[in-house]
Image 1: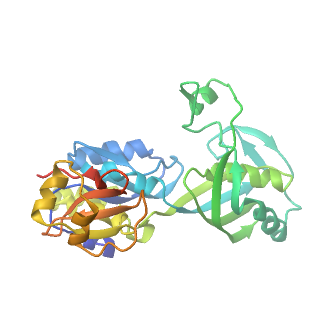
Image 2 (image 1 turned 60 degrees about the vertical axis):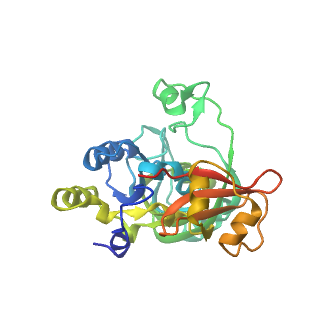
Image 3 (image 1 turned 45 degrees about the vertical axis):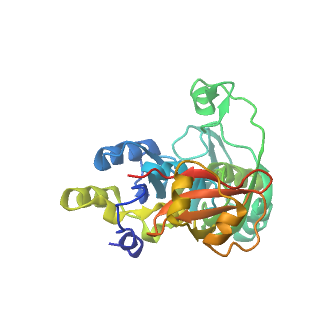
Length: 319
């Protein structure tokens, strides 16, 4: 069992049994395939994933179970890291190796220095045009649905951010890159655009997500491990608690009286919360984690001083 998985062997009584599974997605599985498989294994009524991975991709796919589905945005909107492999000389309609070839060009003159220079255009904040084969909606349909009909539409560029982009290996026509990026970034578009920048063509041939939010590939478990654990013991021994994705928020412990108020959706005054702990300096819209006296995550409170004080934003149901 990995170190992170061992930490997941936490108590399952109390406020809520929601959790995450940090899955190392196998190639050729869709993210929906993984969710469907684990729904059967865990018998969870609510289950989802924290960020789609293409079938060609492997690596970190956070699975949200139970009340953790309500906190999927803490994973979806976090930074992500990838190791991507690009092949020069050919572009495809899907921007990856599973698509149909759309153009070919000579790549023999491309050097490592030229690649390094081209990558400068794809670091920091910039606008990226998503691929046609994507789940973005256009007039009520997914873009990939239109693409499969041979229809191509204009896609508005979207703001993205790449905080790190490094060459790991250059063995033309293959380029291996490590990158860290914001939510909404398309590695397939990067592969295509790098080819255009180098005045040739390119497409994605490999993609491994190495981290998503707090979840890292060195701590990930396989679907087979979850199945085996479910059959021989308890799959939840491999899980991570909900508040693992909330450590960036402040924390307070409430008295029993305030726990009942929050559980019923009643706001707490600034003075009430001040009694529970040292709140420091908070601004409107800031959020904190609220725990029971037993140390169980109860709710996320949002600071609205002009209205109530601290309003329960997400409350975990008592078992």
